[in-house]
Each structure stands twice: as C-alpha cells, then as structure tokens.
Image 1 (cartoon, helix red, strand yellow):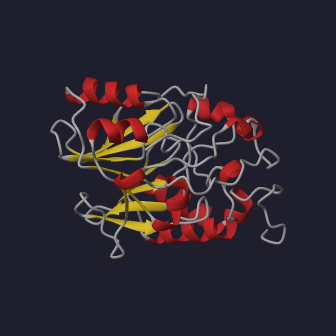
Image 2 (cartoon, rainbow, N blue to C red):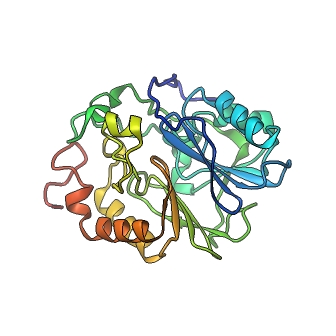
Length: 282
C-alpha cells in the first residue's frame, strides 16, 4: 500500500473541524478540515463499527484523536468503506488501514484510481465557481495503491460489515461513486453525489453555510450522470443526509432542498462553463 505520489497537506479548514456529531442512532459524522467521515456502529468497542471514507491527506492523527476523545480509544473498525477515491476521501486511508489491518471496500469502477493504475482527470481550474475552484490545481489527483486490502462491493448491494445498509451506484462525480442508505430509517450517506455547502466558495466552506448543491464543480467530469444520480437519491426519500462536504441535513429541509436540486440541477449545479461541461446540457 502507498499514498499517491502527489499527496500533501492541504491548508484549508472549517469551523466544524474535528467535532464529532451524532446524526442518528449508531451514525456519527466527523468533519476533517473540509470533508466529512462517518462512524457507523459502536466505535467504543473494537470490531463493532465501520469507517466511511478517510478524510484529508495527513489527517490520520486527527481521526484517531477524535475517536479517542469521544469514545475513549481509537478501536479498530471491522472495515473501511469508500464512497469514492478522491484525495479528500482517502487522505488517511493507507495509514489507518495498516494500523488497524482491515479490508477496504469500494465500487469496481473506482479500482483504477485505488490500485495505482490511473490518475483522476486534472481538477478544472477554469470552471465557473469561487476561489476553491481556482486553487484546485494544488489538489492531488494521482492514484493510490491499496493492495490486497481492497475489496469489491458485492453485486447484491449489501455492504460487508454494515448490516441493514445498502449501496447505490451514483456516478457523475467519479465513475465508481457510491452512496449508502440504511433501510430501516432511510439515513443517507451521500458522499459527493450532492453536498450541503457551496464547495467552490472558500467563505462558505470556512463557515459551513448550509445549502444543498451539486457535487464539487472542479472535480466533477460527467454532469449528465451526476444529475441522474441526484434523481435516484431523491426518490429514496432520505430522512437525514450526511454528505461529503457540509453539515448534516434533516427532514423537510432535506426533502425540499433535494427536490429542488433534482428539478433544477442544470441551473443550480451545472456550471455555465468549464472543461467538463457540455454546453448543450443547459
């Protein structure tokens, strides 16, 4: 296992960095600088929980310290499950997986970026958006190598070691992007299929100003697929959503915001111009 060749600490943070929040029974959210990771199950006991995504580069200590402060120790989970492999979702994965000696699950379409075979497309600094979009050239895009610990999510949509949850293929932001929903209460972990902060705006990222938006513009390469994925998630009628970026959103606010995003995705989410934008999609 090894990190990408271009991995590095990214000096961006938010006011919620490092504060674990209980979102639903046995569902916790930890903002790591500007991205969320989730703890599913009982992190107070070894092998009774699962880590969803792995934060920003060089953030392993932040995650371990937050677990220790909240639950008394940084017990090993049963597994790590990935929504996708962008740098801000796998930043600490090599160090954590080696420390805990656990498997890592992802969609097969994401494997080239997790096995050292293929780099993600370069971030689009030309895309319509705010300051973070303009500075996105500093973001790592080369692949990581997860070795034999990497496992494919089962075809029947079960999630190993997450009983009661199912995965949904939600491509667009990346080819193998997935989201997770708990069947009993429709708790949704959306990854970057949509987010609850305007992620290309530095001010809104810093303050975590809550609003539903499409996936981060500077790293999304297939906007038609991203639109379809939002429609799929809307029809699941989630009761609460933890997205890759921004605060959790609940109830009527979530329902109405997601309905509006699905209906007006071309106006709200798709930029007017950019390297990966089809001008005919608007």
